[in-house]
Amino acid sequence: GVESLMRIPPSVLKKHNTREDAWSVFNGKVYNITAYLPFHPGGEKELMRVAGRDGTKLFASTHAWVNVDFMLDTCLVGFLVSEPSL
Ligand code: HEM
Image (cartoon, rainbow, N blue to C red; front, side, top):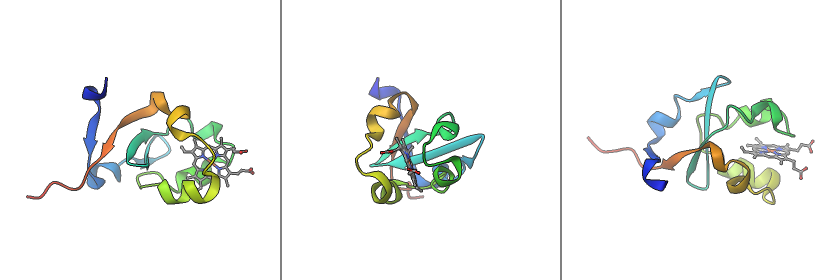
């Protein structure tokens, strides 16, 4: 359920930027894209450009017609939130 999903600030997101552990953000939702990397029709290298970052803009500029919510539903980790202030 939604209550088990995490609230992820940019500082946590950017640690997940390797082929073995890649997270990215699309429309405010954080996905673990690691398992999908070898299956991306546009190639692993293209997809790795958004690892550890917000991929919303690059995704929209390459294929806005692809339904990422549907495709990566089981890879949803949580929601991007702003950095907590100290
Ligand atoms: C192609 C999914 C992220 C670049 C595709 C296609 C799918 C897909 C389904 C085939 C589309 C079609 O033929 O109509 C995804 C998913 C992503 C993602 C689920 C997020 C996890 C990205 C990102 C980039 C990118 C961030 C760019 C940095 C491309 C390119 C193609 C492509 C260039 C075209 C490949 C070709 O036709 O030769 N992607 N994509 N994708 N994707 Fe992605």
